[in-house]
Length: 259
Image 1: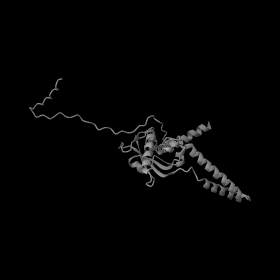
Image 2: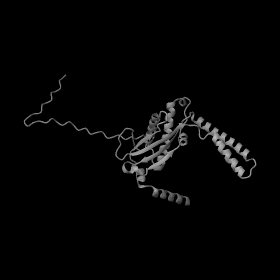
Image 3: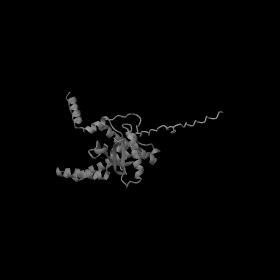
Image 4: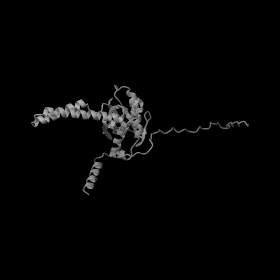
């Protein structure tokens, strides 16, 4: 009973701390436009940006209405600003050598402080063990995937349009490369030799992480097929009849020839 009361109090406290505009967007989300940027020094950066942006739009469109890139959205369109901050080839976590040195130094210092005469040897062997474990973890991750993916980090901000855009964003969070790699699916041996297929899976994993974090914040649920905003078609007025002067008759249309 105490646990239920605690959870209810925590939920009420969370709701009380939620800004009104955030709660309003959670209940009635407006269309969202994805605006993604990538550092200029990334090789084939524009191709990577397009791939990642398209995957994110497709995934996000299963939760809210998305304004496609290049389409003018309605006035209340919110902007999902995705700033990719770092792109590098995945190396499987921290360097095993660095892990070993840090672990060995820490064990040696603790041993020396406690009066252990063999602290140097203990630090050496613990450093070797930690380095070996880190190298094994790196190999296991690469073996699971079957390919060496990109390690991509980004900062995400969801902003309202108009005057609210200059204030605090509706949501703001970082996406780390390890999170994205954990969300990647393994590829078959044939797919792992296809650079295009690898980039597609990298982009999909990035989109999964971003949308999952937004879903946790706003409580959105999937609504099936993706929904994209389409601007209304301009209304076509029917042709007006030709003007006639007083006393002038409208010429009759010639009948179609009979066959």
